[in-house]
Amino acid sequence: MKKYTFTEKKDTRSGFGAGMHILGQQNPNVVALCADLVGSLKLEPFIKENPERFVQCGISEANMIGVSAGLTIGGKIPFATTFANFATGRVYDQIRQSVAYSNKNVKICASHAGLTLGEDGATHQILEDLGMMKMLPGMTVINPCDYNQTKAATIAIAEHEGPVYLRFGRPVIPVFTDPDQKFEIGKAWMVNEGTDVSIIATGHMVWEAIQAGEMLEAEGINAEIINIHTIKPLDEEAILKSVEKTGCVVTAEEHNRLGGLGDSVAQVLVKNKLVPQEYVAVDDSFGESGTPAQLMEKYGLTAKDIVAAAKRAMARK
Amino acid sequence: MEIEKLEKVASQVRRDIVRMVHGCQSGHPGGSLGCTEILVALYFEQMKLKEQNGKPVFDMDGAGEDLFFLSNGHISPVWYSVLAHRGYFPKEELATFRKLNTRLQGHPTTHEHLEGIRIASGSLGQGLSAALGAAMAKKLNKDDRSVFVLMGDGEQQEGQVWEAAQFAAHHEVDNLIAIIDLNGQQIDGPTLKVMNNRDLGKKYEAFGWEVISVEEGNDMAAVVKGLYEAKGRLGHARPIMILLHTGMGYGVDYMMGTHKWHGTAPNDEQLAVALAQLEETLGDY
Image (cartoon, rainbow over all chains, first blue to last red; front, side, top):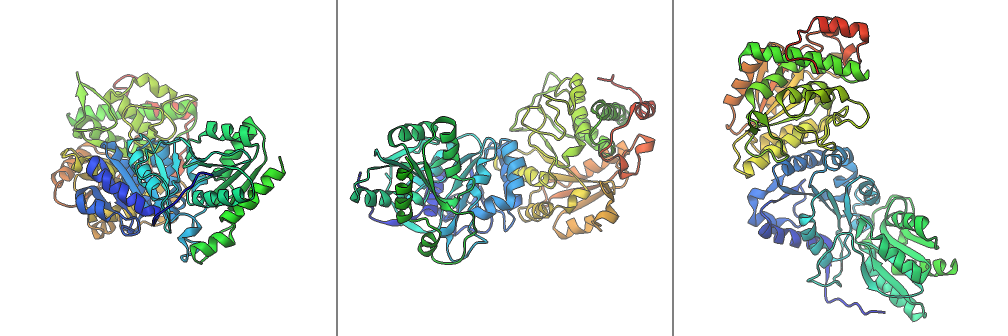
């Protein structure tokens, strides 16, 4: 098992803020919009240096999406930012008509996704956003795994022409990817090569998958770990190449079992190569208040759960 | 352009509207007929458009030209006809309205790359927000042209409209002229009965807008005068609203003043009656 270490823990939303800071300096067309959550989205450095390119929208997310769509008409690259719940479910029709159907170059950047938002509870813990966004034709959907990857993804999506949903989160987690990485949209990252089971993980679950890989190794199981940071377009080739080798899959995501990464992977398997798949995901329920660690434990999203799923998948081979 | 010439264009546009809706036996003639004067006045008289050899040249960015957004996308027939006669695409294409593989979708879309259209509309309440974004982009680009957006009065029942109204005044978007088609009708009946908007002028004033009322929204001279007045108020740190009082179905006697022709197509006999009331001025498609 390839060794992954970290010297610090950071939140992925700070990776987004750092990426925006750089974009502010590099790309004069980038405009940031926010719905009264500037601090939460870590936008202060961008705003300080580019006050004329920041649009405060107030608590009016529907209008923010529409204004973003309009800004693209003058060649701007709007980054519309708020919590994931308000960036997707609340404004689905606005995204559908004004952004996706109209093929506007809007970047919807959503923090506080999933259970790890923690104490605010289920009203704010969206677990359906990946599904909603990936169903929109033409939408690119990205869920990076740590601070460095989120920063790289933020910079990369500015160069991509077309609507993007970028999902990140609130808790501090290990920073374990390369600080100078080049982010390639739609290209899976091979975290660890293995032969017994493929663990395909996205977002915060990638670090859990690495820990699970170490636990499995101690039991003599050689896990292949793949980071799918781009849910759509999905790197089908990487998935199929892996299952050819391992013959079974575990998918891991901080999302409802219905409609997320797991279902996307399942569709690839059904069409191309039937192998056993186990889901590590929230089992079709809402979240609740608690610390991020407590919630990940209660809803079955830890390294231990990935280990158990890997064994189940292998037993079904 | 002289008022008389604009009126001639309007008559042809009205013929197109009823023929298009008849041709596919669906679509929205009532609101389209009521908004004919404002659309003709904007495209043939008021808006500065990018042109080459007297024909408009369409690009998505619209730099250096005035932009128009249709928020109440169901009145697409009037917009399509005006765009065609203005030279954006051949008028023969109007015959494909709402038919399979057409660029003239039931509600306007950019998906089919129809020249003149910059965003999809149809799901109501979204156009003002998009127009505001385009207006802000013009400011960022130091482009001194303006943005126009047309909404329906029933559409004012959508919450997003008021998010946008608040935003426009707060950000002092003063290169935008919004227009509400006050025809007093919506699908389920008179707006007063379905969901009373009450005094939209006072509401927009309270939100920080400049409000102009055009009482005769189907009188070409009055519409042009109203647009000049609105333009005269651009650039004073306030967004501008024109309350345009129109008659739904205006120009076809049996369609006038009723919500019944909001989304109903005339049959052959009704079409003949309508066309007898509308002079063919520029040649039918």
